[in-house]
Image (cartoon, rainbow over all chains, first blue to last red; front, side):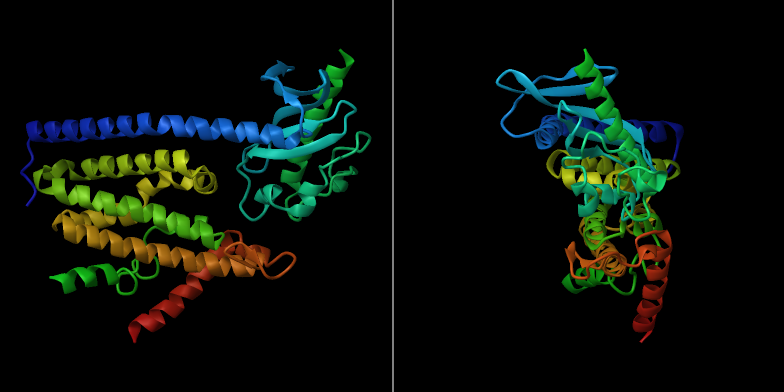
Length: 182
Length: 195
């Protein structure tokens, strides 16, 4: 059945198989690179638009204090910021896009990527009650979960994820505060 | 001949069901079946790799020296998995995001190397394709069934359609639920299969 092994045919066979596979992968990579980049860019753009008030003119990516952020201008006055923040969740980095109004009110939030437990922490992208509270989260409210004496309603059985989420929003709010003081 | 090929496809559902009879590919089975749709998607991804790797391996097997056949099979399987990963990222990024980590792990799924060793290395490409299709479909159906049950009990929904308000039985969404559902399904399955 299979050919008898000797050093030459073993080396030759492995080399040929690897060469062929590498060529195939290179080809597929070249073909899919553009759609993958487009999908990522479209997703980022959609996330920014989603956390900002409608109709504003969105700036290019800016950076301050180690964060990436975007300004939305209405009649050349900044009416909101979208800030990208990351914190450690339960299963790894939790990255958010947070829309903040100049007065510190949270406009909206969106999860860009996470590795939370499916069915538990991952609910931060689907739990209606948890997500709704971020819309118009007032500037004076404390960004910690109720268990820790704050004003954030945590997701059931996912306190660690909720804490991370609140912390990421807090970072965004702090950044906007410092931008306002400048 | 046609009848034999047909039985190659159908055996994956009952007699050689990879999940409930052969007990292969347990890692993705337990980890990705938190909902019906996740189970279905994982099954289809595995099916894709299995059929292609079975065909490729059955074609090259007679030429491969015996001592390096495992490395060669693994390279072939890993290539198809990476192709799948790139294609999913490009065209179905939503699905890729939910399955993420488990796509590259298809490489080490014992079902695929197992079929390469036990079947594709010794048979023609058409038979191997049928074998891959049969086992792959069996795997897909098994994962979907586990996913459906876990989703109903753990989340009160069916393919994302929520029919019970509020939280379900949390344990079924987590690892213990996966073992419980798998165990009970195995009991039922073996009872039926033995008749």
